[in-house]
Image (cartoon, rainbow, N blue to C red; front, side, top):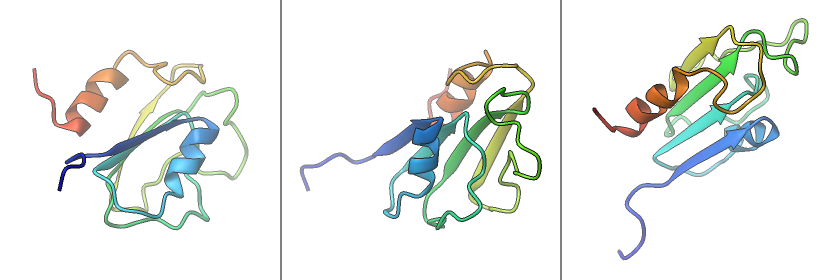
Length: 104
């Protein structure tokens, strides 16, 4: 009754793995610079924004999916920036704003 109306989680790198496994319902989850976790117990009630570079030097592993196309509640935004930074692509802050419902 007196708590927050909306709660968002965000995780960068290993934190992105952690938030993908979060079991409870929240307003949304933002994943920065982490692969799609195949063994993740995807909470279908949550919305996910997945920001990942296809040229991330830490994530280029053969046979491991970068994106979560098979998950209907994921919006994946890919980049070609060769970086592992949480906001490596200059387009990502605007994608986050849209995901959170902020408009210009």
